[in-house]
Image 1 (spheres, helix red, strand yellow):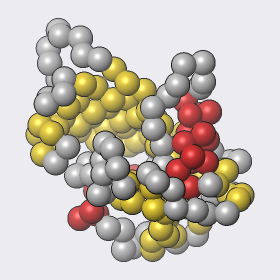
Image 2 (cartoon, one colour; image 1 turned 30 degrees about the vertical axis):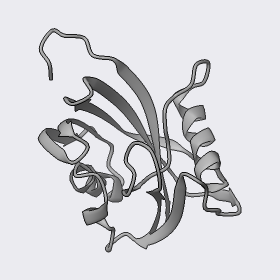
Image 3 (cartoon, rainbow, N blue to C red; image 1 turned 90 degrees about the horizontal axis):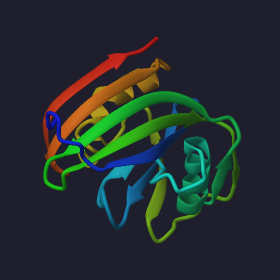
Image 4 (cartoon, rainbow, N blue to C red; image 1 turned 60 degrees about the vertical axis):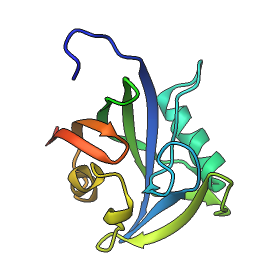
Length: 159
């Protein structure tokens, strides 16, 4: 990281919806992470819990609600180019309600868990998704030069 320098820290949620051997990801159409597949989520707003953030973002980005969310991982990202840190709480869910819709921000798509589009995802995903897919809790720290160049990484199972 950056030694003793304190960087702006943003808390974000990430929600992965899995049903059997399928995983719902969204193709990010604009903003941070555009042109990548990712779980659903975003910045925690004032006066909401990180779980409420995950639920809100899922609905805003896909039209779905999920009732059985559980926390499965914690990730810390350090972006050198913007001097920003992101603390991301990863949730998993299975039971969804509503109609899946494409929004102005995300285009949802189901993938077979054995054929995830890692080449169109964040570089760190290939390192921590295997823990998630094996239903293991995990944590990780990643440092990026910009959105596309990962400089360092550390990932481990926590249970």
